[in-house]
Image 1 (cartoon, rainbow, N blue to C red):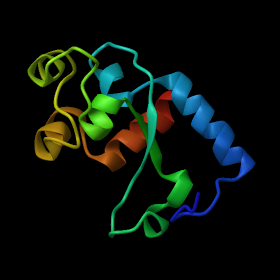
Image 2: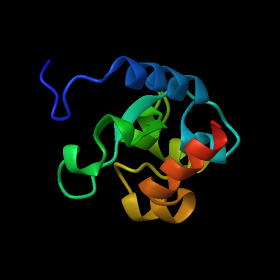
Image 3: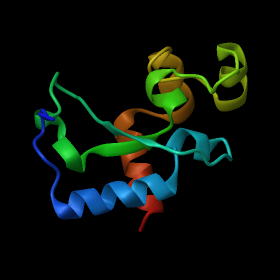
Length: 111
């Protein structure tokens, strides 16, 4: 698979594992733990200019891509877990903070 940021280093891959153990940062702010996907921050239209594999936050499928759990309506997901970044970026930022703020928060929590 070709990646816009290249292949992650061994240290970056280990960090991804720690982020997956941390759980979705938006869900944690609501008091839940959910499995994650790695979200690369994109500030200037490309991952490479935004920090690549070093500027990533853990988000669940709901908060990352707006994918509700099987058999659960989107409205219920929003009520329980809050807005999805993919579906409602402004509402997501209002509730959880910007991607950079979440990155700083996760880094601080993982110290």
